[in-house]
Amino acid sequence: MRCARRLVITADFDKCLLLYPLPDWEPIQQKLMGLSSLNPRIRDLQRQLIGYAEDIEMDAAGRVLISPALREFAALEKNVVLLGQGNKFELWDKQKWEQALERSTGFGDGNLPPELEGFSL
Image (tube, rainbow, N blue to C red; front, side, top):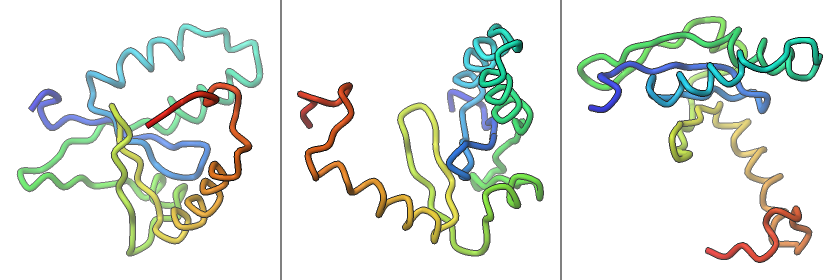
């Protein structure tokens, strides 16, 4: 396994958790910490992503323990959803994910951000 079972888990502004393989997290952390903390928006981002970041390790069965602080942040209860997002995973409370999914279905209305105009699957 590329990350040798070592992951970093942190809080996302969408009130879900982000799980990164350690090698993918390290450059993100370096870039974030290289930004000026004099800008309040950058400082908020650093506090959120770096402040909540925890190193975790998968057990032999591929399970991880999530700290109470992160479980509380994401309001994780019994039912959760794990989504693959390229170089990371998102971990959502199932009910919050369903609400987020309802909001995201608005892309079919033709009101796309400029970055997605002309994008095709």
